[in-house]
Amino acid sequence: MPEAAPSTSLTPRSRAGLLAELEGERFDLVIIGGGITGAGVARDAARRGLRVALVEKDDYAAGTSSRSSKLIHGGLRYLAMGDIGLVRETARERKAVHEMAPHLAEPCWMVVPARSRASLMKVRAGIGTYEKLGAVEDADRHLSWDRDALGEMEPCMRQDEFPWACAYREYMTDDARLVLAVLRDAAAAGAQVANRLPVVDVVWEGERIDGVVAECGVSGDQVEIRADAVVNATGPWVERLARLEEETAVDRLHPSKGVHVVVHASRLPVQNLVIMETSDKRSIFVLPRGDTVAIGTTDTSYHGDQLLWPEIERTDVEYLLHPLKRYFDVDPLGFDDVVAAWSGVRPLVAQGNKEAAEISRKEEVWLGAGRMITIAGGKLTGFRTMAMKVLDFVAEQLGRSLGSSPGPDPIPGGDLASSLDAHAASVAAAVGVEQPLVDRLVRLYGDETGQVLSLGPEPLAPGGRVIAGEVDWAVQVDGALTLEDLIYRRTRAAWYTPAERQDLLAPAASLMADLRGWDESRTTAEIEAVRTRFASELQFQDNA
Image (cartoon, rainbow, N blue to C red; front, side, top):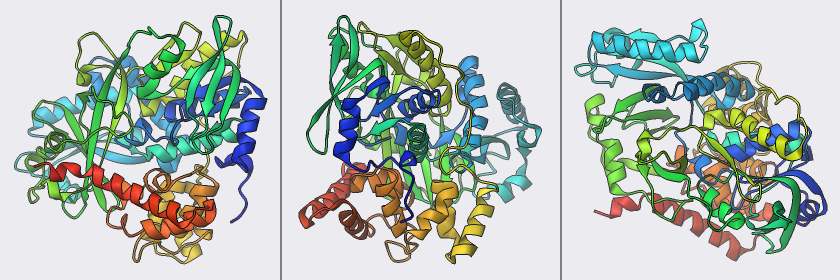
């Protein structure tokens, strides 16, 4: 493997050395939580010159930040809810994320079907306002599609029900890979980051928190990390962390479960992102990607304990599949057509007695009794502006000005001089591999695709698209410690290449075993753990 610069890698040269550095240095800021919020704060703080440490109890992006709808969007529906400030902020942030990572913010058409010309005009008026708030350029303004255009652009849509549509620009992303790229940018600016390092206690200095105690999930060793400011960015777990600071901390969250299901594109051959209306008047998305199509999301209050892997119920799947027959002229889809599924818990900030679907996605930042800074709520798209608001609190805590927030400079993988398709074609020609395989890689690794291919272009499974080089890259650069890390959050094979996900487990585990020094027993256990995870996703199929 071409040696990666340590500052751009999430894999320490030595785990023991990393723990020693975390304990041996005093930091300006320690961040708890390795999702998109914590990653954004780490990048902003490190690039402003702060000494930063970030610790994550599980894997980077293991929770909510790998379970989104994979959209960089302003949230058109929040405009109807009157949340104009949130829409303006996140709609404008779409362009910033695209500048940072064009491979992870790919412009696509979002299609809103309309039953009549009058309803089309109403939709166009709302989208026009949305585009003005988001300062959308003329070339990206919405389009109106009639029957002829729909027949070409979305041939499987039921034109007897929806003879019109409005198409406007949104951006598709890969949420987990975005987190990894943002963290690598933070590391390049000097941040120390560690996964599998849960915080088990806080350190007090008088009446203020002066750091945290973390316990290594690899070695079992405990480390004390001292810092002048502490940020709790743990998403659905923020209240549990707050209890370390204050046992009687007030509950502020209204957790909401979001479920997505995945079907083969051959069963639902859509060409663009499509919005559907559900029986309870909510909007859900149809999201094509490669050989798969995802449908989501639900938005229901969650009162369970499985914050990392919340349950997927048959009622969730029924809710998502039911509208398809009204919108598309395809054979009915049932439970057995679902080949993968994911669910996550959104850390919404409670608003009185409002139900989850009615609650604003606006973030909230507050100080605890020991001056710990906690952030909850917010949207994936707005991670930069959320970080800015947190850093305002950090500046006050440190008692000094921190200068300007960093701009949307390219993050690792984001330095592309051409379109994704053009870059993929160039790499495919240079390396001599099929372009469909490279198309997938470019949308995960961007301008680093050639480096990944150089580590091994051969597919792990016969005829598959996940390649051997991705295993090496995941372990050596992207900080993967387990097979689940690789399959779910590095290669994304669990949800985007379900046809090969079972077949690639053994060869992928074998390569990881060589890189991480696993014995046969550990390798077998890693494979079985992922197979169990696959089965748990689809358990609703057995719960008739």
